[in-house]
Structures are given as structure tokens and as C-alpha cells.
Image 1 (cartoon, rainbow, N blue to C red):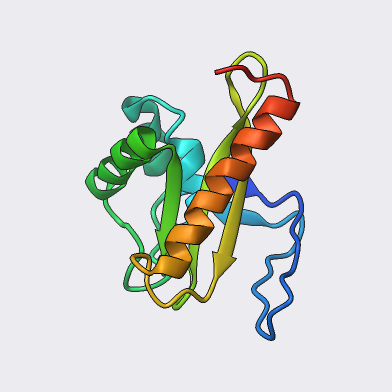
Image 2: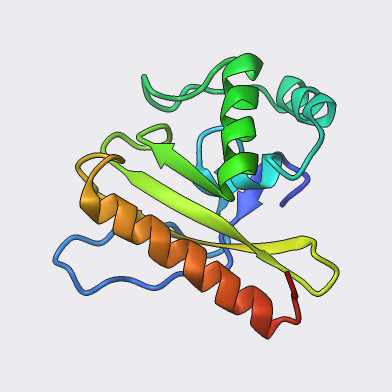
Length: 149
């Protein structure tokens, strides 16, 4: 997380398909409009989330961007329950993403791992498989960092 109200993209890997979706490494991504940002927000108390969103604003990037604190808080409750965050065209039209937290040995989220792509729907088999792979990968990386459930 960057104090500027953005989440930091540390690294990425481009897939082998003909279409590639890449953000610039080192780029700041908005908290309220990306899976990575919402995953980070889900680690905070609701009051802290509201204060942060109020201070940073909630710029609409697409017609699907969450622009109310209530809508964000509703999604954060789902993220906390499921263990992963989804972006459904909120930052860029047509892009969908899923992210899960990587936990350190003190059980604190320290990184996120995710997949961003041109999935047709978040309810598709392809997106469900990506979600499962992201969650399992985050669990493996967490274990390698010393996290024990």
C-alpha cells in the first residue's frame, strides 16, 4: 500500500496468450476499483476504510466502479468471508481480476497474488479456475514464508 491511496504493483508475469494485460511495474492502482486495492481495504476496520475513501475520493473509472462507501463495505464483507477479491470491469472496461492475500508467519497480509484478464464473465468456468489457482498459489507462498494455518 502507498500512502497516496494506491496499491503498488511490484511485479507481474505476462501469459502466453495473444492478448496481454499489463500494468506498469511500480504503478499505483486505485484502492476502490481494483481487486488488489479492495483486498488491502478488507484488512482494515470499516471506520478506517471510510476515512481513507473519504480522504482519497472514489473516482469512477468505468460505469462499474464502486463510488459509494456502502458499496465498497458490502464487497469487503464478501472478501473477508471468501478470502479473495474480485474486480469486475471496475478499473478498465472488459478486464476482470481476482486476488488473494499472501500471509506472513505472524498471519499478517504482506502481499497479494492475482490474475488479471479478459474473462468473459466472473461466473464462468474459466474465471472460477483462475480463482482457485490464485487462492492455492497464495496459500503456497504463505506457507513458504512461514505462515501456518
